[in-house]
Image (cartoon, each protein chain N blue to C red):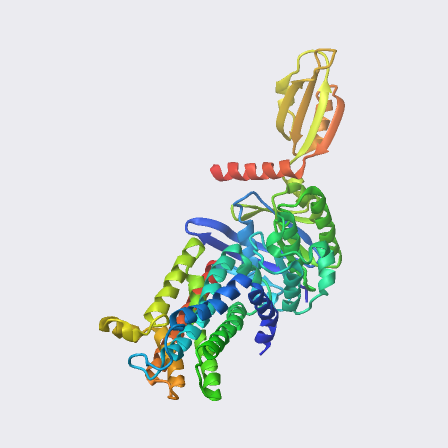
Length: 252
Length: 311
């Protein structure tokens, strides 16, 4: 674990910086809760969302917690990595004893420290304002699953940061972000989509991601298919990020 | 075991059809302060990138302290400051220096690093709010955060004013006095002349000259001789026939006497030229013999090289 030890200083500094960035904190921590209130605020707490056993507030709580985590891990890192590659900071770090993966590790940690509060704040708002009630183990399992699942999209954020540069990175990240949010049913249940779109949404990683939490809310084991979809995308994103990272290293 | 700090063996690197570094072979020894001198596009930055393992050579080998560049960096033996080295923004200078200390296997105290780089006063300032010269000093602090044996600096004084530049080199000399090897790339020729005890002249990716600044000047064949001749017309042909003469200019000295001339000669062997001057029956007055500045020497070397390759 000598390598992780060497990365410690950078991880600490990335955490400090992430928690200091008020604009980003607001965007990823409070924005999902506000959106939750907007969508579920006037919904009644008895009728169920089509095709699920969940009320709209319970359903949207998981969607918005997932959305908040997605915002935290995807939006900050891709742009920052692209910027730091261009400024030469990444090159400067390569002249230190920091191991190659240390930079990505620190960036992921910086995102994770923001994604956790964004999940918890949505839960608190849902419980207090819309009376969502779950067992203690469900709250814990939800938090753990959504937090851990966000690693899939953290890997995507890193990959985008190494893929795009300059002016291109923001629009590419935005399109990916909104595409994943909408297609995955984080803003509205996919059951409200036309059938052909539902068939596509079934294979979108954010859909599998939210389904993970919704299964926990119904005291069910997560569907094997959702786990498989997430695992495949995780492998794809980390593989892509690693490949792009190596390409960048050779070019620099 | 003789320690070699840097060893380049027949190293080449091309970008497309451009040979940025062309069969470079060189060895650096401990305690030297070495200037890598060359015009823009000479291959200085590529050479440093290869040395630091940021780029891989197409052919040849690069060794630092007998190992690969990456191993030497991980062992904390190298501190480097790049021209293109960006800084992490939204953190303070002190936080960034602390990071550099954290990442070094044999770190110095953060406060010492700050004071040596002269940035104690701006320690609490955000990195993105620094002037160019201040940012350079922060980069220097990052390069000297620990007890490294080799310090590599790519055009370190870019963006510094004269005072800061002098203070910077004073700090750098301290590093060298402690037995460290300092390698810096520059196109400030007076810097190479004033600071380095060894100068490597790089031109089109090849090593054109390697020696002390004085040797480089001598290699360019260059002493400057000037004197006045009074009375009557100057016989330019006989002046031109002087041995070892490489350049001749004759001008009116503009004295009240009217007919005097000032002669300026560049010679690759000033002693022989002056001897022949007296032997030829001329009576030069106000004779001066001086070395060329490194800048002129440098121009002379590269011109000679270009003339040679043009043939």
